[in-house]
Amino acid sequence: MPPAHPILLTGIAGFIGGHLASALLARGYNVVGIDNFDPFYPRARKQLNLAHAQSISGTPSHGNLTFTEMDLTDQQAAADLFARHTFDGVIHLAAKANPRLSVADPVGYTHANVTATAVVLNEARKQFHAGACRRVVCASSSSVYGNCTTPPFHEDLNVDYPISPYAASKRACEIIAWTHFNLHKHPVAMLRFFTVYGPRQRPDLGVSTFIDKISRDQPITLFGDGTMARDCTYIDDAVAGIIAAYQRIDAHGYRVWNLGHSTPITVNEMIATVSTTLGKAPILIPGQAQPGDVQLTYADLTRARAELGYNPTTPFAQGVAKQVAWYRSLH
Ligand SMILES: NC(=O)c1ccc[n+]([C@@H]2O[C@H](COP(=O)([O-])OP(=O)(O)OC[C@H]3O[C@@H](n4cnc5c(N)ncnc54)[C@H](O)[C@@H]3O)[C@@H](O)[C@H]2O)c1
Image 1 (cartoon, rainbow, N blue to C red):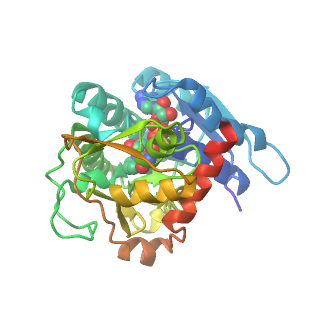
Image 2 (cartoon, rainbow, N blue to C red; image 1 turned 45 degrees about the vertical axis):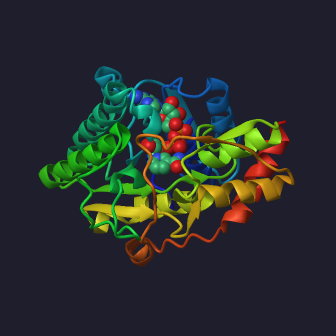
């Protein structure tokens, strides 16, 4: 039975946020979504991310969606939002989300990611003390593992050596969230996502880029030798993990969970799978490995499977086929 009060979903116009909003509405949750349409990728893409959720809002057996455009680093705007609504809890996905680009903009990434998380937690705990807003779920990232040398990466590994400002901002959020829980006993889950892909994927990410470039006969710059590997997670699997974390965090207090697939795919394999799915050969040009890029991401899912019942089921080739079908529907 969905709760009476809505869930606050930040970053709702993003890739994961748009999918999660639709899944929550379909389960009968009411959702208040906010986003500032950060110009990191086009607003039109973000409106497309929101459109499906908006189209099912209020339909039979679905919850209602209310959307507000706002910037979470604006403390007064956040206070006003929490004054207007009583929330069941918060799922905080809003962030600037690209490790490579963060190298040139550490201040912007720290502001959008760390300050906004502190603002959300601060407003959420005020409602918690007043008997509402029972929990917060926040997006962290596999990038916090940096170049750890003991894969697969378990949540208890030392993650004090991130190699990009983005990863450092996500690690900072985890520490701030732990302090928040320790002070206020307000449950907080930190979810380490591993390269989420599928229809509407962010245009800066590998699979998106490869589909677009191969389709348009454009060259792909291969940064490094193509052996860099990512543990790619299909969007529906990630969404199921987020909802499970929302439903189960109260029993844990503060908890970090990996949401990956536990099957790293090299960049060379990604390009080959996309190429086979499209039935077209890639044009590759060599490039330098980029600062901020880790060599490997690889999730140990022991904890998420045991505590969340998390069970990612989508094989990479199947997920890519769905993303290609979506891409073709637009072009
Ligand atoms: N997609 C992945 O593979 C992946 C991997 C690891 C972690 N994550 C994390 O998951 C979350 C969602 O990722 P995504 O791929 O959907 O990214 P996204 O960029 O598509 O979505 C993030 C959304 O947050 C919004 N936003 C940014 N700053 C904001 C602010 N100050 N106020 C309000 N809204 C703001 C953006 O406009 C955007 O729509 C992010 O926190 C990201 O760091 C994603």
